[in-house]
Length: 307
Ligand SMILES: N[C@@H](CCC(=O)N[C@@H](CS)C(=O)NCC(=O)O)C(=O)O
Image (cartoon, rainbow, N blue to C red; front, side, top):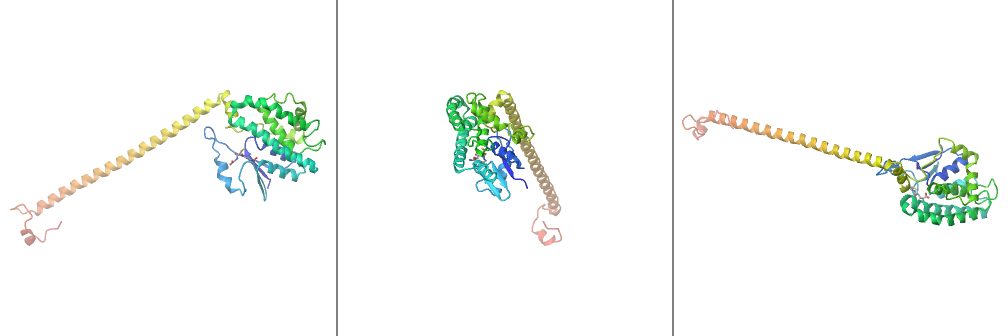
């Protein structure tokens, strides 16, 4: 069975892993857990299996290949790096790969903080971005890849760097303008034959880079007028639900009321009929003379039916 990489239908923390799998020619199931519509963004499908997958620390992304079950994106990357010899070829390279993997995650996390929760801090974030990019640019220097001087020396760190740099471009398309060596790296990466083929295929997930509930994506939809539509649809949906509940409750109340009334009516009719019958029987047993059930009836009327 093909290994499975699971995440949402989003790039954020899984695209660099997808790219490693593609680059290494690994057949894999690209599993996307759905995220529901606004305003709830329901993740029911993921939460219904989260604790049933045999993962020690259930999370997304996860990677399952037979008995190998891994969560934590960098752990997945390191596993694939070891498996496909993409983790650095010397101790010095391996150290640099490790540093870069964590540096790349820190770099991306600052971005996610803005695009997911604090879009109002975008300007402040962009002011600080060139200094961070300068560090990466200095580290890359004139090498083809972030760690290796060898043109065949791509490592898992390059996949993280490509993807997280790209996510910065999504927020600010001009952010790499001043960094020619990083732009060269981005182009070199996209020109890798398997990557190029993947990017032209229907399997390629061009976007969204950030999940649909991130402030960045919500803003984008607002600009396209979609949020208004979503709000209308969601309100219409709530009205429909509430209306439905009211109608069902009214129908139940009507049925219960009618049944109670019918039973009460039947009971009253029955009682009236019984009273009438009782009166008739009483009349037929009453003494013609005294018109009462006097003790003489107990003596002379034993054959009369008893009440
Ligand atoms: N440190 C973890 C972070 C994983 C994480 O936060 N995943 C988010 C999506 S980016 C999620 O929705 N996880 C599912 C969950 O918390 O149940 C990693 O690098 O894999």
